[in-house]
Picture 1 (cartoon, rainbow over the protein chains, first blue to last red):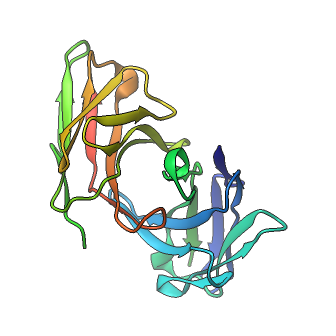
Picture 2 (picture 1 turned 135 degrees about the horizontal axis):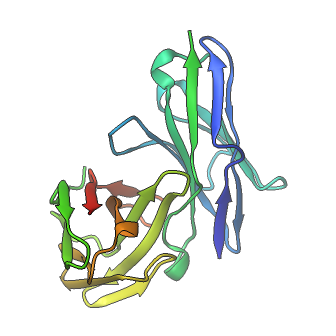
Length: 115
Length: 112
């Protein structure tokens, strides 16, 4: 079984401030981890993914995430928020084979960026 | 990019009527998925398929059935639509093993 916990449903930061969105996972097999972004009334866009290569993963739009097995975490960060980062962010986990080979999502975090 | 198309994009239907949503892929990917998205719940898996005629339930399968008679099409049916099934439905295909997924644009379903 696999699951994802995203703490808090809403994060608000000032433009130019650090963005930190938290994600903790549970998986009975080595996980693959993902962050997706969804802008209002749009579909899902992949930000980045961890596939057991480098533990620090860089994605699009200046985002990055670090896989920490000891903490079962995969937190998303961006050094300096931009107004265009306002969106909903989802963390997701999948496993290698069979019934684990499907994406399980967290409940999502809405990021607001204040001018 | 793998081609994936959902139809219809929007639908309004009445309580108690059957509804079928279609997901079509232009390649031959084995795994296909149906999710629903609701505020505060993220995306939840309804059903998935790992091949023609091979399907399994996800975490919110009650009230839904699926069929996959050919590789490229994965159909989601609401046997008798209820207001609680008002949602946005996303189809996805697994394109790179367990670490690559492509999502459709979604179907917004309203049950009145």
